[in-house]
Image (cartoon, rainbow over all chains, first blue to last red; front, side):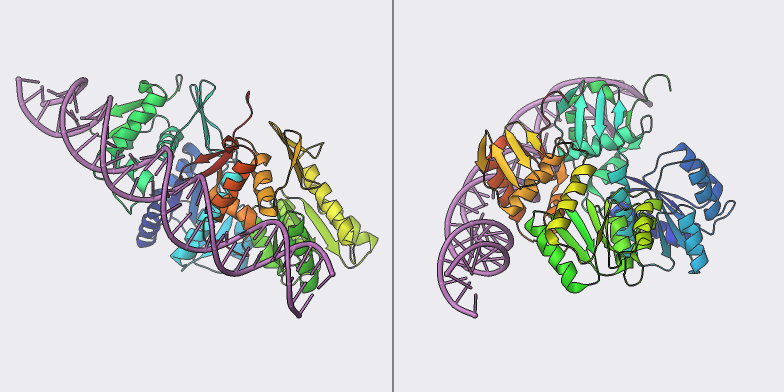
Length: 222
Length: 222
DNA sequence: ACCAGTGTTAAGGCATACTTAAGAATAGTA
DNA sequence: TACTATTCTTAAGTATGCCTTAACACTGGT
């Protein structure tokens, strides 16, 4: 579950990222509006948390452009002002929710969970990779047409890797997405799970980048 | 099958909820328009029963907003007035049906079942799975031709699971569809009901996904 | 060839789920 | 309203299987 935080206030952006990671999300953080727009176009996020006051390209323009380009991603707007017209403008421009700064972390987390839950219910995004089909909606996985039973950890790990083929996930990133920040694991549990996944599918599925982490190869052609 | 009742008249709202629960639905009840709008955005309901005269945000605005936001949920509108223009306005705004107060409980229940059936896209209101037949209308269930007596909770649980074979329902989702948010349950009641269902049918009917929830296997093929 | 990093395997611990039964709650009836 | 029957929840004990651990084998890089 990948979330992009676009916020130029350093302490706020950092705090949000930490809090998000603690909740088990993967959080990326950008402070620049133009960079953010490019990231949104090129990568896939499950949610964008968008401050309105940004350098180089303001939040409202980003929001408008996202909807113009029909990019399907929920957006949670942050603003320092609490003017009604801003709120209305934001919602009109296609924001999924709206939070006025300063906000309570607990509250914003609840809203984030609500948005993510909602959007998951809508989009039936079926992840496909070679002969593997993974439907986040029903938690079902098939390989060459046959159903494959994955345990919870295996499922989380696989869906994380499959969410961005070609992207190298560091061991730390994967461990974090499996366990959050609370309880660190101090053994080779991750490697064991990788092993099980390779066994249930085929061993070339997940490539090891020695000293770094793991990747799923991009399908041919790309 | 989860239904949201939005009605500021206490006795009417309460009466509707009781009647709905008796029919095997899960009913949540709100009296405030704004709260209702938020609930509709954040939760998932199979039907909204909407009074037009509401505090803070009137029914027609809610209805309009639901359709603006493209939230997919059937709406049954209640109104005290019987003016034709209201009726037309409501239907134009996207109501699925329209009932004028005071109404007969039996009649409204029939309409509710009709709407729900229609929205599920089932021509025949009969859910079949292997040797199990479940008719939403009468709350009757047969297994291998013989009638099986299910209690209300068992029925709700089974119909929820059967509504989407192959879909993994998380424990939370099932608890919510059984109880709404009125009364939370804090024990293993869900597991007990699952146990009873397996006993009344066969234990392989419901598969456990450890750490996640439960599924009914898709029949062979796909 | 050595060493750090990674793969493989198996077993024990522990969280999760099942089972059972009894006491609350609810619905039905007079 | 009170009484009874059914249904639901709670709780405790038991069973199950996933996850971690750890020990050892392997692999690639220097």
